[in-house]
Amino acid sequence: MQQVFAMPEKRKTPVILGTDWHTDCDDAVAIRILAWHQWKGCVRLLGVSIDSAMACSAASMRAFLTHEGLRGVPVGLDHQATDYGGVTRYQPRLAAGMDWEAENRSCEEAVRLYRRLLAEARQPVTLIEIGFLQVLEALMDSGPDDLSPLSGRELIASRVSELWVMGGRWDGAEQPEFNFSKIPRASRAAHRVLEGWPGEVTLLGWEAGCSVYSGGVLERACTWDDALKTVLRDHGAASGRPSWDPLLVWMACLGDPARAGFDTVRGWARANAADGRTHFVPDPAGRHRYVVRRCSDAVYGEQLDRMILGYSRHLHTLEPAPETVLEYKNKKGEKSNETPVHPRPAADAGPGAVGVGPSVL
Ligand SMILES: [Ca+2]
Image 1 (cartoon, rainbow, N blue to C red):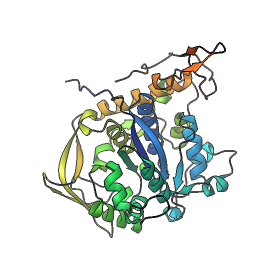
Image 2 (image 1 turned 135 degrees about the horizontal axis):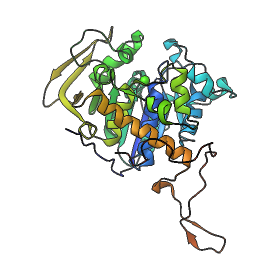
Image 3 (image 1 turned 90 degrees about the vertical axis):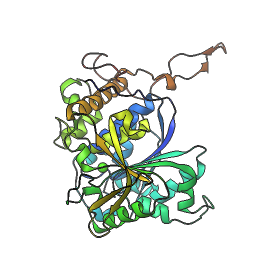
Image 4 (image 1 turned 180 degrees about the vertical axis):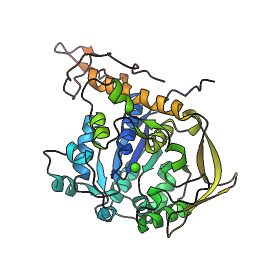
């Protein structure tokens, strides 16, 4: 039976993305999925928090956000998070020609970015975490400051609608998952966030995304320049990459796992503070839930690829989203709804050559 997926609602839900932006590249695919939802008017990206600190973390993130039509989104960095280590090819290429140290230095401390954005929020904010959890742990533990008289827990309780986390394993497997176990303090942070987060948490585990491949559509069907295509090639994943982070971002932007084709199990999730191994106790009154797939790998992968290529074509053809059409006065002082100039330069091929259209779901 054909699975019917929900179109995004034009709610412009404010979201903050936390990402390790580390050695894997599915975070970049996830940002493409988020950008697609912003284009469709579903979400509004308030900021990005990077929770591992590499040589060109901030420079490569800012460059990629610009490629994705998200220039100017504030970027925070956990400046202490050099202990995650790691080397990657895609970041240096994105950051070529930029002053890496200066870009990192210019980033607001990640916890302070969260506190500032939450203090300024006038409607509930969705938090999406596709990396390590020590920044959210520090947010939870933060005290009142010049940004807000509220403690971190009070800010979360009053301003955050829900936290969405890619992490853990919820299929009963013994092995710990990467985000919850890369280094000891990642495990401790996972333990403490699951134990003490004052709100709803939805978890997508390793098992839900490991066999869903996405992104390969760019190699097959995108004949123009696309930064994400280059990122995937640099990672050695031109034919696609498992979709842990993209799947979580998709359901979080929709605000409901069911709308992305997932069931949920409610209860209490726990992570071992020493090694990040996870455990779940079903309970209808629990504040946590993990997602369970309804569909085949191919069905999820196709849906993600349609968004990935649809947004690529949008960037390439400079097609304006309805939400970005500005009203302005022409030379005669008359109001006009003419298309504004898109900040991206024109690329080298015409529109509509291959693949699916931008209205994809
Ligand atoms: Ca990640």
